[in-house]
Length: 234
Image (cartoon, rainbow, N blue to C red; front, side, top):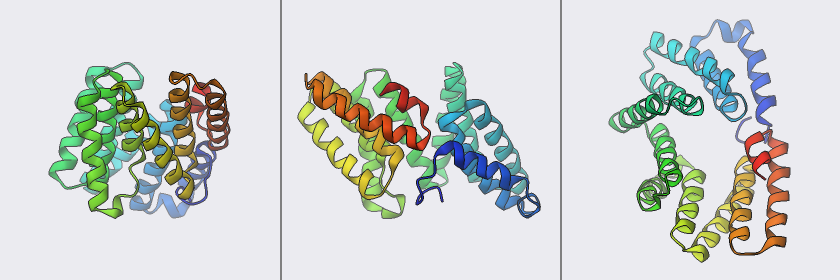
């Protein structure tokens, strides 16, 4: 449902919330843990307070079940929420710890997610060379292991890093390829983000009409998926 039907994140969160109240889910702790993880992913995009509750419950349940990978992922997600709340030092400790644990335990999915996030952190500090190391590592992992899927955040972050280094032609070409992948895979949430980045590139290049077209497309896609940050930026 999450990956194939383009369900808006608020609607997905509400659906999972109802499912969590059913006897089937309440009486199956492993199913409940999975549901909390899906709800946490959705709420990460729209409601930090709800996401914090989701991941705290998920971490507690994972610890009870001995599910170390789930507990570590939940810790990392709580670290991201700490960042949104301004607790930067605590966030760095939790996310960094989750990344190192994932690498040690060969939890590839979690490793990829936090490598992408750390790379974006370097971008935010205007240090694209350091960011590029993380993005290229993730892209290489995905090239070797197709089960990882398309690392959209890595491609997006790499394009932004290239733009910061003044390599605008490379950045725009990479984002056009990434947008094409998002559309092919019907990943509307990434389509909106990709269009937003392309719009920002167009502004930097003085292409105002093209930028407006990109921003309008990004806002439409983000609104359809219930992503307020991308919609507001657009």
